[in-house]
Length: 229
Image (tube, rainbow, N blue to C red; front, side, top):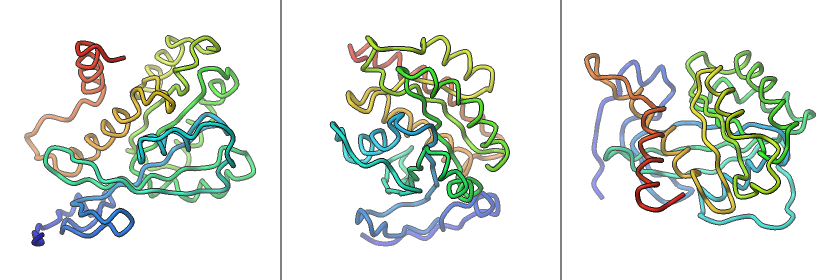
């Protein structure tokens, strides 16, 4: 594959994106045009690692596994409007004792996926505390998305979907329920964030702003029409 050379605008440099020259993503042996840092946040055991593995590998981590210690990351390259976008996804530990470690990574992140477990009221109640931390440590224009995970466990639901929707509306962030087990909405969550970040990077002065809420809703309606959940 021949290398394409493209200039990077000052705006893109300030946003912390990679050089706009096709580079090799060594970890997955794939080229990309631009890269963004995404972090997964939320209490311990809400399913952050499972959501990451589902998106990265299309697999589900069933059974018991060791909880994330500190912080870990994986890369995945996705196609967004004919552009190769590398998402460097950081998986963080939810335990309080690791918070000082994860705080140091907030400022470099362009997007934050904040998760709670729909079967755990406590994990939902803690979302406000997480949002307080985000507003304190993260970039002012960081993309935030709220995810109610473990949607496949509806029989054990402790948090109504409407509660998640109301909280997301209060903070002006997009929301959806996901399931790492079934895969529902996991890819959509990451792709929506990728599209938002890509548009911010490449948007022209007279080009309309990308509406992430409308994109998510349109994709969900499209899935419903195709008989998908």
